Length: 162
Image (cartoon, rainbow, N blue to C red; front, top):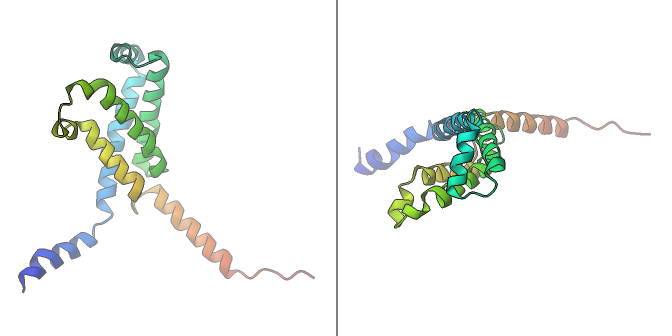
């Protein structure tokens, strides 16, 4: 057995059998975090409004329930793998705002920025929005069903009209 086979072919072959796992794990991890933090924020809105006001976020009484609802709903959508590419986008926006308002003053280098958990969320969410939810998702089930219906429609002859 050649070293090339051991170093490249074997790991690639093993990885090809579990390509469904990384997007599933990413969706579960990120979706769970956002769904739970959104739920928590909705149940303690006064504290969140106060925190947003301290950060100087405009209209904190409007922004807090909006952010909390976005995190809860989009987090649940990620967990289910439903509308994943779209659901990831508002969460990216939320994380960019969190970085800009709550953390930017302490970011003095690329390492500091890349060390923020919010940056990691942005990376995972960007990956999910580009690559999609993977085959273990409601999106994949609906896509397969739509493809099946489209194929059936193409194969079904149209009746001739006289």
